[in-house]
Length: 154
Image (cartoon, rainbow, N blue to C red; front, side, top):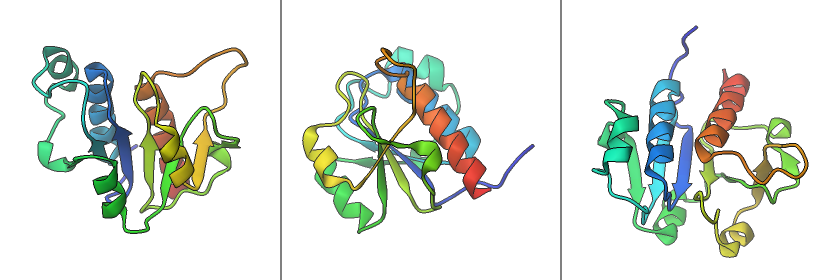
């Protein structure tokens, strides 16, 4: 079953540091119709062979918005809703009503997002997991979240 692209829906990555995960997320966004935003700096170069091996021909650089840092990202949002996906949230992602113009922000693999971002963002959601488990892979978390957004919005 195919669906129309959700042109206003965005996935944002905060300073991603594992090239294979970012490449996998680019592929997922490309296939599912979500826009991708990357808040720099990245922990790798886009010509990294590990990145290129996973991204294959799914990357269209014009479809990705790059921000030179958090301040540029926040300024560009111009009061649009930003939803932070974090293991530190209380609310489950399945209980949240997503909107087409939302930006869903994910932290990097090694440290998530700094405390200042937690304080800055009003909407924080989690993907519930079994007790004593630390976290899901970033690419997996993005895929799970996109699937729920598509379910709600389509």
